[in-house]
Structures are given as C-alpha cells and as structure tokens.
Image 1 (spheres, helix red, strand yellow):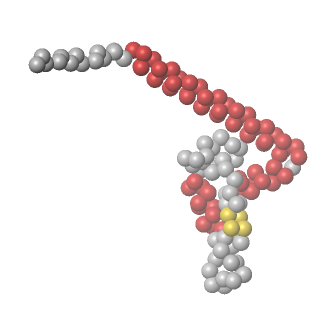
Image 2 (cartoon, helix red, strand yellow):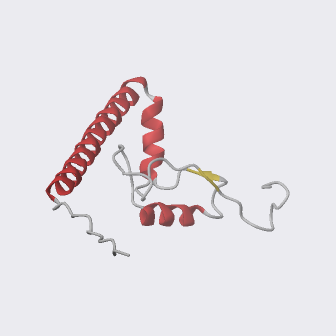
Image 3 (cartoon, one colour):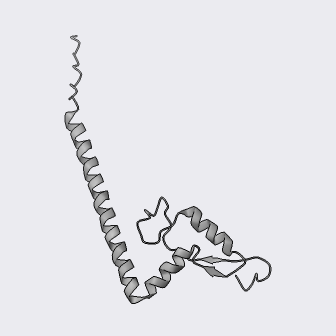
Length: 119
C-alpha cells in the first residue's frame, strides 16, 4: 500500500511493545500508557514509514537484542507475570470462599405447605 499511495497519503506501520489497556495489565518492563503511545505515534506521521511509537519501546527492543540486557528484561517480565498470576489466583480463591460462605450462611427456606381440599 505504501508504494501504491506514495505522495498521496501517509501510511505508518506501528509496532508497539507493551501498552497498558484493559486487555494488558501493564506489568511488563517499559510499559507505557495509551495517551503516551498515541502522542508518540502521531508525532511520527509523515516522518517515517515504521515506528515503535514511544522511545521506551524502541529502547526496549534494542535492549532485548542484547544477550545480557535481554536476559535481564525477560527474567524481570517472567517474575512480574508469576507475581500477577499469584495475585489473581489468590483473589479468585478469596471470592470463591466468600461466595461459598454466603451460600452456607443463607437461611434455608421452607417449602410452602399445600393443603388438598376434600371433595
């Protein structure tokens, strides 16, 4: 598309890293907020064809390419994911126990008595 529309419209390919959203918890290294990412991307329109967006994402990609720093970042991310999953599991267990306790404490309703009319 870039070649077909050259000179007519700007086409920018964005390759972001971690952006905190409702679908991304933002626990990874170099995570940025959506407004930061959007601003960085808009600033690149007309300047380049491909961008990481925010400079942190470019730095993250560069560091991941280095064997030493890449290993450190991946280990950090793994620890963050494990901690997040443990918190999520603890919250789910607590919610289940609370629900179970509420069900057990609920007073039992008696079935309504139905009297048969004599004919």
